[in-house]
Amino acid sequence: MIPRLLACWWLGLAVATLSAVGAASAADIRVMISAGYYEVYSQLGPVFERASGHRLVTTRGPSMGDSPEAIPTRLARGEAADVVILDGGAADELATRGVVRAGSKVVLARSLIGMVVRAGAAKPDIGTADALKSTLLAAKSIAYSDSGSGTYLSTTLFPKLGIADQIMGKSRKVRGPPSGEPVAAVVARGEAEIGFQQVSELIHTPGVTVVGPIAAEVQPMIFFAGALTNTVQQPEAAAALLRFLTSPEAAPVISKAGLIPLPER
Image 1 (cartoon, rainbow, N blue to C red):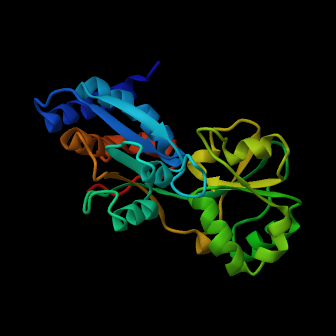
Image 2: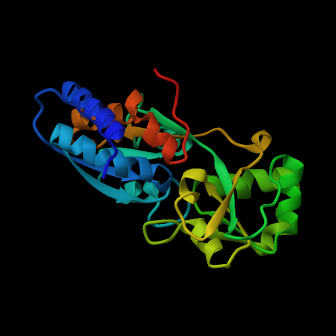
């Protein structure tokens, strides 16, 4: 059951959405979304549907990477979407390619990369770049995602730390949902000693302990964003959804999901 306080701010959010949408007729909004923001969307999406009368038709996939389920790959082969919600850098790339509407990008929340160990295991030090480097070198096995966070680790951070070659043989890239699984699930089964992914994708998996975000000095500026595609069929309804997800009342859900709300706009 939704606590009374949560129900109150959901009601305020619903009223705001009805005002934004006005008397527009109900529409199906096709949404493609990556895993990092999905927890927030799964909570707020049904509220938006009840408030607006619109229906969300949702497809999940990674923000980037070589998976056939990745959002850019889905769009490239002609799968339909009105809205994409994914890593902000991936949204920018789609805009460069003319896949999403120029100027339609809306930043939704900041995301941090974190690390997990199996429940009961010691929590290694990752509070500085040097400590993180030592932890990576000492680990028997490492798992990371096939999307934005894993791309940053494998192509930027590991080379920057000077250990890419040393850890290559003990590192594993994990395919994410919908056909795959969170990195934390691999760690929970004991198939990797440590695992890295967006904090929002780590905190809801049983059988692991979240060590925390990686060191601030090597933490990238990752944001989740929404944008309208250039084939959007319901632009007003799609834009209303993004307004709904960026309202101040959404901040508690964003925080609970392991993301960082943006300052009020």
